Image 1 (cartoon, helix red, strand yellow):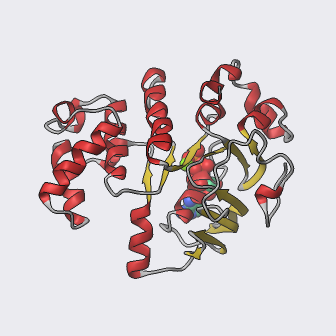
Image 2 (tube, rainbow, N blue to C red; image 1 turned 120 degrees about the vertical axis):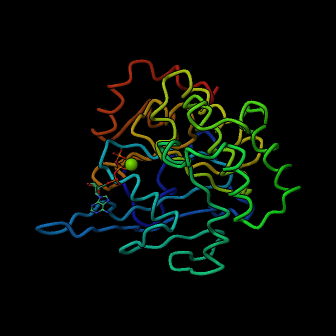
Length: 287
Ligand SMILES: Nc1ncnc2c1ncn2[C@@H]1O[C@H](COP(=O)(O)OP(=O)(O)OP(=O)(O)O)[C@@H](O)[C@H]1O
Ligand SMILES: [Mg+2]
């Protein structure tokens, strides 16, 4: 289960457990091949992401886990088309989206939504949550009446009522509530893929479980494909069907969550697992 550059899911056992839901055509919804990012830095260059190939089958949850600096966010930014890849390709619904522009890129962005680490950074402190959400919808060209309905529906998905959320300013909410608002905002665009980059890292343990459970339910309720990026292998295993482990920009291990927990191959994975004392309890969603 070490890195293979062409057909990652062809590796033995990658689909063990029969938990992977394929899209109708049998091809992954989103995938990347040999995706690489090299940054020029003083005195040379660093390869933050090195020939990464991953598949995201429809309605699956894939976690990418690795220590700080392993290249997770760089990978995310490339997949989101927020940063150009140095080389490699990204495909979405069998279309090469590596270099799409204009309307094609905008429609890709509406389907692939992201939630980041710090919900405060995404909020304007002077707007209530209601005005923030309405502004997002207005920018997307959604009419007011339809927008109000959408806001209510999407707050419902994340377990918030309009009364709890709409009239509040960001500082009047808990970190977990703020992060759920950000998930609701992403859902308003009716995405098929939700990318969460350290979306739960700043939350304390109980709020974190709360947001993880929201993500888990969304995958089942809405058939969302979730890419969950974290430095915490415990959270990765709690939520994901499959886990890819990144070290220094390279995917050193990939497999079903059970495989990664119970028979890790890479020394790096074994080290990450050693830091989590009770990982079997994390398999709640795999029962
Ligand atoms: N714009 C940039 N210019 C130069 N180097 C960069 C840039 N962005 C990221 N890097 C470097 O690329 C490497 C990977 O960074 P990245 O942010 O992708 O890691 P990460 O796994 O997301 O880390 P963390 O868990 O801390 O968020 C790091 O060495 C980082 O310093
Ligand atoms: Mg990061």
